Image 1 (cartoon, rainbow, N blue to C red):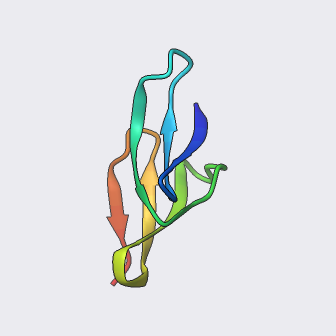
Image 2: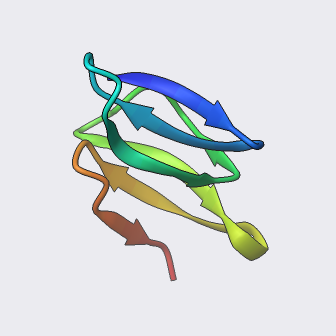
Amino acid sequence: MALVCIDDKYGFIDTTGKPVVPCIYDMLTDNFSGGLALVEYEDDMAGYIDKNGTQFWED
């Protein structure tokens, strides 16, 4: 996967250019630790996503 930025929003595409994680995040780390990457979303919400784009939000 490759990290991409479109209109100041971040996501991931696969090797064919198909979106894997949509470009909706204000910040997205390009490394996965324990299968999760850190993201920031609207209103400074922070959480994690897995390589399929499943979101895990912190309380």
